[in-house]
Image 1 (cartoon, rainbow, N blue to C red):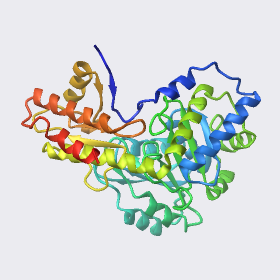
Image 2 (tube, one colour):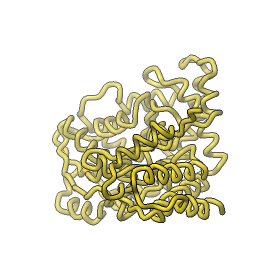
Image 3 (cartoon, rainbow, N blue to C red):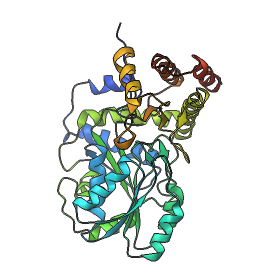
Image 4 (cartoon, rainbow, N blue to C red):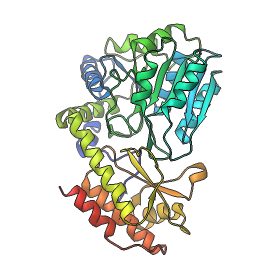
Length: 379
């Protein structure tokens, strides 16, 4: 028997009822039935984003949403603070450079969270900076950044906006888009939204829309003003990913039924169980400051290749987790706990790590991490 377990931070597992809904006969995207569905989905996204503003939907990966966030709000020659504390923080810089926006880099040790005061000091010295680009949850390191404090500071500045990659944060823990003053928030379908890859979501504040009026960067498919005009009519400018939107409707109904606060509580409990279990095995977490409730990055024990942990789990035990990226390749492995995860997924993940580490010669006590996880999750 070859049963598979998907425990990586994206794509994440998909509920069976969502898969079934997407397998139904496809509907036409210009027909009234789609417009009705699209209106329902827009309302559900506002609930998850915690915003009164519309949330744009694109057939794209999350990176498409990130690119759109840059080209619709900034202009060539603008400066933008870019927090580089992981692989996806680097992506903000690459996107800025691709379009002639000058990144002002803040380099943060991978595994650390940026000190908001560092951002504030730069903004005080250079009030001409137009944007702060940051991750809410840095997937490559399992670290979260204090976007609440950053957003609340930047919303007082007329000439600067906060642009947040919340692709592995939204729907996992509390992101109060409007209350915190987060001007642009990007999310993706394959994380806590429990869907296959293929949809990007972007919310824009009124302040961000004012920036969009002045932006002169090239844009066609990711033209937010054009897309907003169409989506206000419950249509899309171009052909949407119809089946994914059908699945999204099912997901959003599920999230609203569970209640967003309970969703956050569930994710936090799963994350705490994972982190505590790894520590009980004598392992060290990469995140030193604010670990993300989306995924946990664990340092491989001395003398053990983290990539081997990932490979053996996948090839011998049918379990997919994630490894390290760039200079962390072979040094860490990552366990996800976002979206369609429950307590037994975490227990399976911890058991799998124990078994493989023991196979690779690590001095650990089998069952110790599982026992700790069970104690946390059993309540």
